[in-house]
Length: 185
Image 1: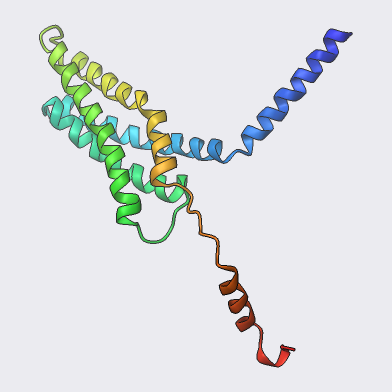
Image 2: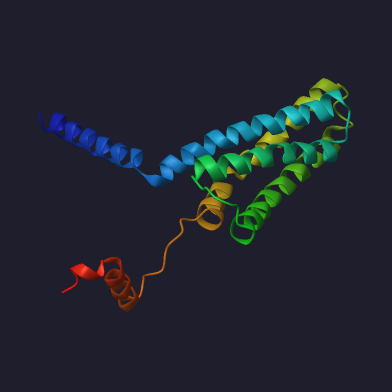
């Protein structure tokens, strides 16, 4: 009997925690971020497979083109859908920090892809298998930095705009001018 009540109490606590998580801004944004990142990852992976696997480009070039193929849609998806920004893109406030975060991530991915190709070049002679190994290492490098990238984008690049408190004297003056003259006492 006591054990049953404890179980019910624990389940209710868990339900409350899940309810709070469902209404959490971070969870909503992170979910949209994950979906947008999935679209960018598919774009990158298909580009990597096309350039390295089909066209026979080098691992460094394939990784670079794949990075760009994912970074452009990722920026658009993340800015307009994930963080719900509108209006013109701010160069210093959004684009430059975004480019820095994404470029660091891209350099890691390109480095990992190039290093993987260098390591397996002598051991794996099948081009198909080598392409698959490179695709996995390219994707794994993005996965490793996924949470860090989200945190930087959420807290640095697309952080919520906090307005400064308005001067009370200015607010009172503006308030007086909003009321028509004939109604003033």
